[in-house]
Each structure stands twice: as C-alpha cells, then as structure tokens.
Amino acid sequence: MAVLICKDSGKSIYLRDFHRFGRLAHSVDTLLNYPEVTRIHAVIEWVEPHWYIRDLSKNGVWLNGKKLEKQTKSLLSLHDNISFSEVSKVEYQLVSIEPPKDLLLPVGNDSLDVIELERYHFLPNNQDPKIIVYFDPNKYTWCYENTDDHQLMTLEDSDIITIDAQQWQLFKAEMTSQENTVDLSPPASTDDIEFIFSLSLDEEQTELKVKHNDELQDFDVRSHHYLTVLLARYKLADIKNHFAPEVQGWVQVKKLARDLGINECHVNIQIHRARKQFIESFNFMSADTLIERKRGKVRFGGEHYVIYKGQACESTE
Picture 1 (cartoon, rainbow, N blue to C red):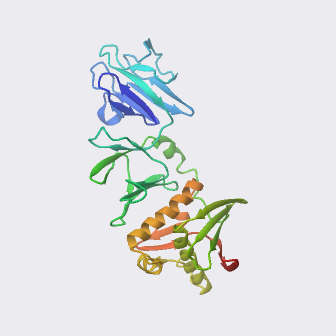
Picture 2 (cartoon, rainbow, N blue to C red; picture 1 turned 90 degrees about the horizontal axis):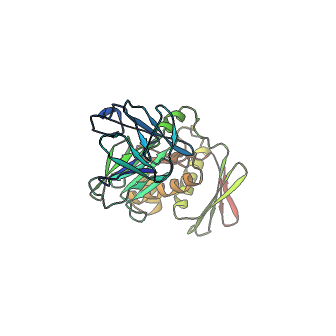
Picture 3 (tube, one colour; picture 1 turned 60 degrees about the vertical axis):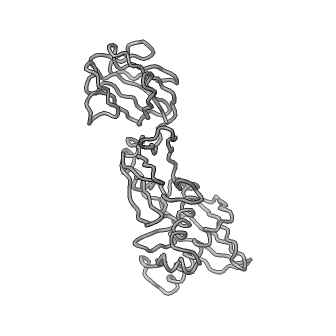
C-alpha cells in the first residue's frame, strides 16, 4: 500500500489506485480545504509498476520543490515531498510506494495497525475467529460473515464492521482495476480440477490432493478435509440415486454437524478453513468452487473426484 504522511499533522493518507486531491468534498478522495486549492487539484495514480502524480489545477503542484507541468504524469519515488499549494506550505511525504491494497482501517484508535486484506481472513485471529472476511473474484466484492449468526453480507467501500468491540472501516484501494476487469473475466470452471481424497482406515486422517492442468498440489492432512470428503460422499450418493444435478449433494448444516459430531458454528469455521486453503492455492477461483452454500445448506462444488480409503478406491466421479 502506498502512504502519504502530512508533515504537519503526522496523519497518514492511504492511496487508492486513482486518488484525487482537491476542495470538492464529495468528488475527491482527500479533501484539501484551502482557498487556493481547486476543486479537483491533482491525481496520484497507480500505473503498474509505478505511482505517478498529475497536476490538474490552476495554481500548481510542487514535487520536491519543483513546480510540475500541468496535465503531465510525473513519476513518484519513495520519500518524495509533495505540496498542493504554494500559499499554505503544507507538505506531504511519500513514505511507501507499494502497490495499492484494500485495507481495514481502525476507527478511532490510531494505536492499531491497519489490516492489509489478502484473499481470506479469520479475525481477530485464526484460532478463535469472530468474523470471516474474504474476496469473491467472480463478483469482485468483499464478503464477511459473523461466526455467531452465520449471516453472510457483502462489503462496500467505507462500510464498517465490528470485531471485539473495535470498529474497522473498509478502504478499497483497487477499485479502478477491479471495475475495469469485472466484465472481462469469465467465472472459473471446475471442469479441469480433480480432487483426490485419501482416508485412513479408521477415518481419523484425511489427505487432499488437487490436480489442475496436469499439476498436482498437495493440501496435506487437515481436519477440515474430512468435512469436504463427507460432502463429496453426499453428492456421490445423490448422483447414484439419479437426482437432478441442481439438487445433488445439498445437505443441511445441522445434519453435517451431527455427522461430524461438532456444533454448527464449528462446522462453518471448518468450511471457511477448507475454502481459504483452496483459494490461496488457486487465487483465480471463487470460494464456492470447493464448497457451495445457500440458506443453511452446503454441498461439495467439485465435479471430478476420487476417494481412497486405505489403499482401496472407495468411490470416484
């Protein structure tokens, strides 16, 4: 994430991939409330792999003490100093030039670090998550779920969520690139993915390997793999009973919890652990490629899979 620091106040400004500065409150990303600043005074933008600044104003922008040529992109470097007005003398320093990154910003608590969002997060920690936040690449949106009520919601820019009494605000820094590509990328398919489950004879251990484009990825032995293989078994049973494809494999979370011997909250966390491991390996896939969900039901999302128990093949699809 790229960050500007106001030298006077010490306030951090996190940069979006197309970040506007000016006096027009509802049309800029950072408000500069000085009379000599124009409505849209300047833009800092990410053009991979660099950041650039453009002067759009009547009164000028200064980079390291030199006035910029209007409407011309100027390359930015680490520790550059920027002034948006010759009169106010307020100066900003570029303290990070990392690529744009979506963030969760702490509200009203400057002692907390920002959370740089990856594809999947268990918050406040992996061991006892209260909130699950993940990115859906097909819809180009952030989603979150409260582990207490399991309500799934989408997040828009500036939305606020609460984690352990602390509020966090979503800051979408990559909005332009996402909007430009959302209609260009077709949904990822599971047709060329094969899931290979290996169960011990006592079913105490479950290993998963995933084959994609002739490459085999080892997902190792994980407790959440048993949940996934159980869902695969439900789906296979429905296929053998000639159920219609749209209903194959759907099972109530309550039944899944009973079959696993755990509560529903733990089931949902296990589902998210399985999805997280999958999409971190296949970052172009949606979370429901592995496990689909709807209205208190779940099902295995794979089309091609094989289940081994011990050395024997139990079933295949």
